Length: 502
Image (cartoon, rainbow, N blue to C red; front, side, top):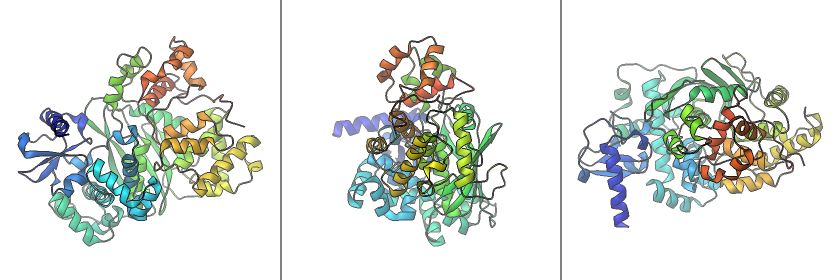
């Protein structure tokens, strides 16, 4: 064990000496002589090996008594891609912590969602991330507060509650402890003022980042009333824990490998306490924590996907702002074109979605929640009866908690629960896993779009599909690259899975 730990420390130190940005967000370097912790790519002079320790999370470094570096802002890095690759209990818990579950439901609520006792979950988090759930949530609140202080004109009281603190005093004490300065010091001479609930932030993403291709996928799937898009931007409504909101994302390509790029997100929130949840959901949507260099390196020598990655590095798997919505929309899309599915979804939104006020033209409704759809008569839905019954049955399972798509439960458990529902086959369950659960290793062998793409590239679909195990653990990215060759129809073609409309 000592040899292994020594090897790990030396590997980390080599990354620090080379200022390798690929490791930003993977680990953090704490310097005993200065009392600060940094990202591996910090431009400051490299400390001596004997003076540094390495930590798996900002919370672990803070718990050890270190404060964040003001030069490299280590807490502003994208999250670890390992949370989605391995999908361990700790990684799933981190996704929920970032969504604000600990602030809203406490450690008990977090543990219940992940499926462990609070004590056992705390042990797992300390072992894997170096800190317990309360410390991890505190670090996330501090990061949100710093970003709001430095990038908005919100008053400090608004920032305190928007970041999830229970009091202004707690906010002030945490900021001073983590950043060695008061909120006023971090903001500088810019004065805060009261707010109407609009917050603009920059979401960090690793490069290369094929932002325009991501935008094209989202724009092709627009549901009227819920989503709109224009040149270089995408906007949608958000159903958040404390009320409705909207987000506009300004997206562009950022192709310089190894750098950190930013997507500008403008949130209009009914309740500022939903800031952390809104930010996390926007980050999921753009797959912000992906490591595109690792994905690209995996396909370097692959004769099918390799040339596609070289032509469009940094392609992301679009995520979601609400797992239940993804599942419902996937069922709506069974056996119909994407355009047809969006039209049907728009009719359902108009009939059953709650209305919202928005300054963004075209955003009029929230997508109907599962409890509402569970009470709808399937005969009244604008789709075949079998699919209508499948949709209402799925909505009932989601509303009752028999299926949870919040990234808390184990992925295999969720897939089994979905397949147990009438009208839900492997194509639907796996597509939901890719989009709603952030699964990086999903492939849809029966998808017509995949087969058409392979034929268009001059490959035998049967032979390629039989060999896709070589694409693990990044098959979702291979899938996106194949679909992308079908532009402008970047979306999956209608499935022919015989299990879908039983």
